[in-house]
Image: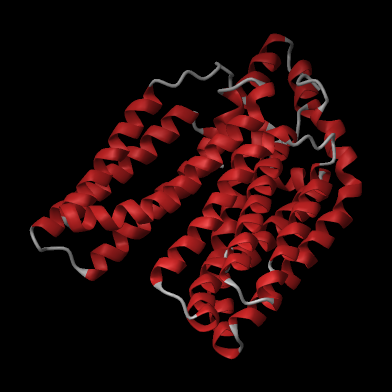
Length: 359
């Protein structure tokens, strides 16, 4: 609700400056050897809270910064920047720790937040009065009649109304969470597979993880080239079917080249699905609740990560990595079937997306 009510630029800049201040204090504490474990946990939590507001805010404001024709490409760029930050940051961060030390690296992180805030200050958003202001202005101009009509004919103004009007969106979010639940443990499976099945080195593990990220980036950037023709959900089902099918290969054939190929295909399928679904959500979710919707999506994804790591880590102690690949494959194929079952309802969402903004 805060993301929906506050101006986008204010939210973005405030979150980044808050994170910069928190990281700056951590850097100062590290440099003076005054940082305690409790303070580290507290500040880590506060930074995560700031990110919890920032992520849905930046996703919500994306359509107002680009034309409708460029929306899908913009979603792809946003997703790719997050993937590059996750993969490149882990690699670059290790080198910077060796070169600069942890205190200077944390300070550099704080400075990066400041630069991000400065860039966000230059963003120009279209001036759109808040919904409450529109209704109040209309009501005062006509004795309340127009305000009442505007309120009745407005798009859903709260998330409860949104779920009631479009139950398919809720089911898609559940499917999105299941995708992340079964896809995320790939980062758990890779080191187990390399160590126990391939009996390889750390270099091999790095190459295989790179194959996954390369696949994700390929899928992300190629998503805009793949036309769904109004069948985005069905395309997502097909992508997940490819993902699940690709993980059958390392489950049946223990070979580094086969595992690398499977990871590239899995990553590409995941990248395409993410871009297509986020673009669909951007088009059909009303602006009044878009912040809450994407906050809910981020919460589902964030919750699925630790649970998935815990579950698959536990399963990794009970079975061999090749069988773990088959378990992951079965779960993702089940998600693909779930999406295919939901595809019949996409016409209603597409019809809503095609409505004039004045309706």
